[in-house]
Amino acid sequence: MNLTTFLLALALVLVVAVLAAAGAAKLARLDGAGYPAALTRAAVAFTATLTLAAVLAGACAALR
Image (cartoon, rainbow, N blue to C red; front, side):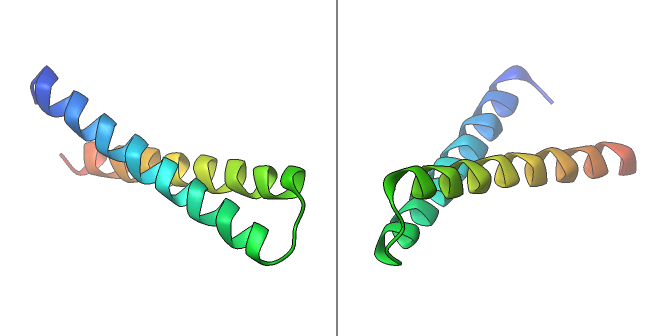
């Protein structure tokens, strides 16, 4: 795997994580949560997305 492919995959994962965090924050605000609670939910969604991507990358590397 060359550097360009790695950087593009990393950028894609980061964009998906940011979109998941933004969606979680928006849903929290629509649910009536305050800004600190919405920010906390966004942080949890962002971290969970990055963790899932790392686990999937590790599993793919183990299969290779």
